[in-house]
Length: 233
Image (cartoon, rainbow, N blue to C red; front, top):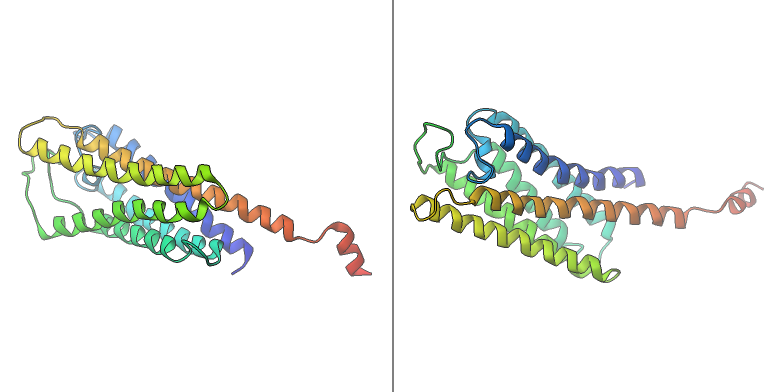
């Protein structure tokens, strides 16, 4: 794999890390009838402008899959070099399936549609579990590898992995409290959006870190001007 190809693959992580949460928040803040506080991120894949989030999830998943390949190449074996990329690829698969298979109407969105449970909705839930669990596990697995050179990166990765799963779990509880009429409107949407923001923010930061390390390695291995002149002679 050429150095330029590796840079493109790692750069895909920055693109995915920025694109997915940015479009979710922007669309959610401007979608008629949708509440960032109340409604889940996946519900933006239904109703008005559903096509936008279908593209967001599928494109984001493909970018994340490319990033997983770049991480595999950048780590070059050793701790986390196998399972880290595998978990990132699993996250990417979950994101693509979540985009292609929309969730069921819930919590009054899309407006006027009843809360139902369908096979497609169940498939979407499984894909969502793969997304959140895979992203959290990837952060934990790669924390060990990153911690070999930077304690701060190990702490940040573990913190991100914890926030992803805690926010996602809390969103599930809030959703059930809302559907049972115990807490309305519960912040299920906000918690899910925060989980995704923590996860994809970590992906973007990791991509920047690996790109910088890759660039430093290229500069260190490049021959000096004097050495190049000597070679020519």
